[in-house]
Length: 613
Image (spheres, rainbow, N blue to C red):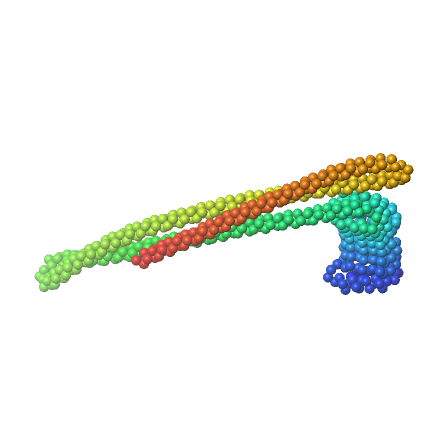
């Protein structure tokens, strides 16, 4: 509001206009009252000059936070009204305009017509205690703009000297207007002609829910007919609002159910994803354990082969050493034989000389032969030991091959079991996925059926509302026709009675004849009225029948809704069962994983114990 005040002061200074204190005070009060909401500027009972109205119009045209403007009993000059109306044509925030007691007519009414035609946000227009009806042409322009306006909801035209011609223009506007909800026409000069024009217009208008026409000289039956039509519009609007509320509630309930089903489906998908990830982790863990077992078996095989090769190498070294020792012994034997030959030759040459040492040499020879026999025996023993060690090495290698083959067979068997369990687990996961897909298809089918049911419900409600509106319109038309017929007959009877009263003075016989004819006419009219009453009763019976049909349709609708609720409950029960099955499968997979882990651990323990042995 401070910005609004500053703009007003700047424009006053730019146009050499004295800023009125009452306007500044009103702006200050509005700032204090409307700090946290839209601004309502109240300038009521303040005398505003035309120049001030020009400045206010320019300020209002650029304002974006003025929601209400009250200019009651300001006695605005006609140029001031025109300036303010032009300024309000371009504002997008104003929803309430009150111009009570400002003697608006002529150009002011035309400017208000331009406001109604241009402004798309105004909802309430209060024009009490003005003289809009004093000039028919200007009010015709105002009424024409009202007919094309699509946002105004409340219009107050009390005490505006509206004539029956103004009422006819207003009736023409009401036939085209589709937004006005409240119209106040009290204390004008509409009369019976204007009342009938409004009545005809209300047969077309289906949005006006309140109309006050007191103090206009309109007959009571016309007022009653107007109030009946307005009440029918109010009932129709209330019925439409209630049906819309019920439909929104049903749509909200269906949306909540669909959301719950979506959450259940997402939960199942998350559980399945968790199961898949858990199965993948278990599979990876099993593969890692299997790979580790294979690596351990290969390491043990390589270690055993290494030990066997070491033992064979040691045996080969021992055999080489034995052969070397035997060769050395054979060399010694050859040397001894050579010495023996030399000694024999020397014996022949110097038998006599060395006869003394023959005994010693013979003794040495026997000792040498004994050591040779011992060396040969030792070589035989070493050869036997070598052959024994070779046999032991061959037996150990054979046993190691047997053990490796058994370990390989056991490993292959374990791998086969693991692969079988993995295949079984994969198959169960696939079955679970197929079950989940089938559940998803059933869910989509149920959701489609729910959407179809919602569309059928909406169409049934629309058809029911349409039939109810048609029956109400037909009933109102019959009632209006009956009341109009009664009114015309009453007028005819009054004219006949008046004419008979004028001719009664000199025509006694004719009076008696006329009395008989009038009685006959009254009887005929009474019979006609009784027939019309019978028709009205039939219409009432038809109305009660239609109401019963509507009640039956509502009951069937409730039964259908309950049936769909039961179907949704069954679907939820199926989802719970599916969740229970998934939980059982998860527990079963966990047990199998535990068994598989125990089997792997037992296998590893057995391998370690075998290695220890």
